[in-house]
Image (cartoon, rainbow, N blue to C red; front, side, top):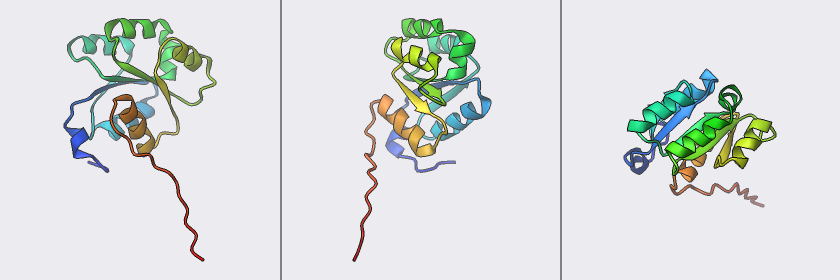
Length: 143
């Protein structure tokens, strides 16, 4: 199912790994990105590292629960194996200590829940270096 797909983006073969121990969030992200990216949902960072040896990702969406569960050292492992890969932490709040620490240790950005199709695609496009629409809300009053 394709929802508002830009055909140019669908063929540029950007690979996104999604690692989120929140199954609903992970599946939603995969669904939202599958039309414009090669989106892979993986169980944990170790699986991402293994798959990334043969299929290097351009972007990793990493759930904040995985940072708490797997430890902050996973960021160093990811950076060592894929120095050019962008890392976005999927979280409920940027006030979480794991999220702040991840940003301090080199994560590129955050993606806040609740997830929306437009918000997810805009964030992913920006991290992948794709042009993104500005989307200013303009109200016009006719008198």
